[in-house]
Length: 265
Image (cartoon, rainbow, N blue to C red; front, side, top):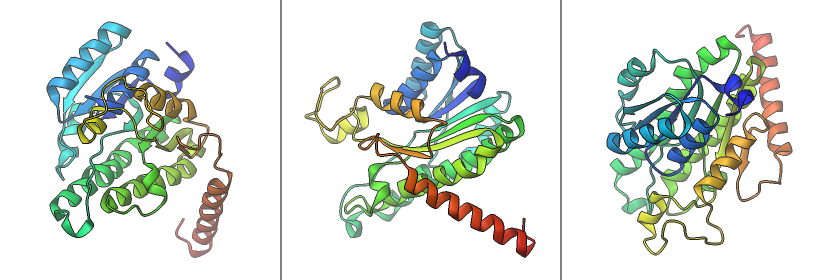
């Protein structure tokens, strides 16, 4: 248990996509720090099993919540189920991708990716950030991608959603920090998760491959950076964000000044 982490981000964390992959590993490492975990996933059986395992291993309270983020009204039911819990940490790790030439990719598949990766993330932040601001503490972690940093052919819609997550996470870093809330966007490298293995059947669980992270390493890197930076690329962990953060600060300061003189603040 980490008392410092628990005091800053507890007592509960909400993790989307928590049934498997990075979401499941986020749930595990956060539970190890002593927080209660709300495991949100469309795969209820897997989430329930993982929740029970975390409760047994770490002695924390857990809840598995079935929720389909691809539905436009997902938040209505989710807020009702999570309202009794004081959520101090939001991990938006659920995500879906589209692969192939843009003109050959079904528009419904791309719209679904936009809903899950971008719209649902936006709505969750909008619902859970205000209580954190009111308490003067908390954390928000958004999962972006290396494809967020440049238009990426053959994953155009996915890359666009991750660019949204990156920009949103960095903007919230600026806006929420004065209120004691840490926000950041994390861009992992390719990670040996069930999702990756479904697309690359030759890769097996536990394989050590150059350029492919383990979920354990990716999540440890992300949680270790929370509260220290606006965003982090796993492939350039030591590069620093001085240039990006300077640009964010300039933009935020300019808009605050503009609001002051236009009477919109």
